[in-house]
Amino acid sequence: MFVGFVEAQASNLVNNGDFSQGATGWTIISPIHNYGLSAQGWYDGAYKNNPDTFSQAINTIAGDKYTLSYTFSTVTNQAGLIFKSIWNGTAIQTITTPNTTPTTYTFTDLLATSNSTVLSFVSGNDPYFNLLQNISLTQQPSAVPVPAAIWMFATGLLGFGAMRKKVQA
Image: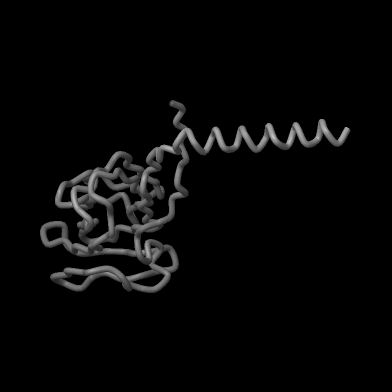
């Protein structure tokens, strides 16, 4: 038996991952309300010891794997920063060293354990700001078996086409 595979096209599952619609789609917990948007993306200046959390419940498929990417930077190289990205309650990255160069981070093979997975970011930088932008979450392609019958059917069609061409010649 012959089995082929077809891959699905990935699309961003994060609602408003570029923050072009303000905070739409995000749940924000901010003890001191020191966050906002700039032309570059989401900025956050909460205190390191009292950080802000913003999150989004993502529709996922239990057992499937996902890829998360985002760009992060700090406004200054001053100490006093905390930044965490959290997938379904588990920290996948913690940044405590300032970096003013926007850096894109990518995490693969994030496993969904249910049909709704919470993606969260915890952010604080006293007395300056963190900047987060371009958040993207895509479902990793999974191989979908194509039954051998489809390949036999396609081969048969090609054979009929070749025979017809031969008969016409």
